[in-house]
Length: 281
Image 1 (cartoon, helix red, strand yellow):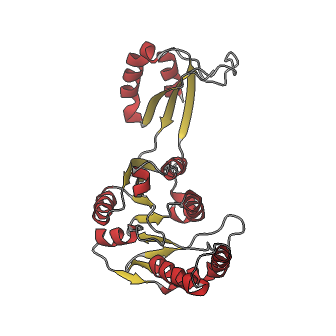
Image 2 (tube, helix red, strand yellow; image 1 turned 60 degrees about the vertical axis):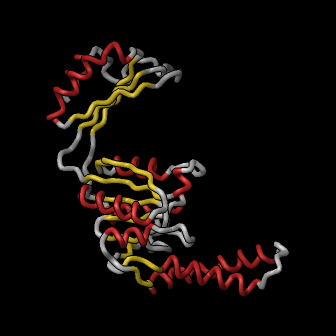
């Protein structure tokens, strides 16, 4: 703490935003954030998969959620990338990231439609083959009754000239086959539901150090929450110390001193950043 106190004095900033002299109503400040970094932190990369993200038709919120959670767990996130539904590109990105970082988390491309290609790309990345998982099939069958009842009601009110039973049977068959076809050497991870600790309703696929999460934000967040303690045990987490300072000074006024300060304390595993907040009074 003495090192950080000296740092505050060096750039002539108030000791903290909670000091008695600070006006709590003033928010047009530049934030200076000091992180005490722990050495040997695990590293991670996030790969967001989906043409809809690249086209701008769907907003990516999963990488924001995951980056926030990884930081809180003490994991050093080094990379976020967004790629399309291309098998070779998926395989290439996964292969490179897997060899570079401790954890690789993918988001998207694991659903029941033709453009969900993450499992195939994952298999290609590790020279693996796809196979039909009866364990996933059983998981799918557990939630099918409610799904088929919903679809049957929709078809009854749609006035479409189709056989309801045949239409539903075809949807179920295709979805079950697609969801259950996974890399042969992958592992099924069953998390624990936060509410009561019971096993999660659907597993997540892990192959080597790659975890494949769903792309739908609600399912992505739920899967991560249920697997968090399994993937990142409390005993292996690194605690981070963070100190945030506020000032109404312009960045130009302290940029030189801040650069010198960052260089001085880098070897002490202190990370310093300046994050302007404009028109935020």
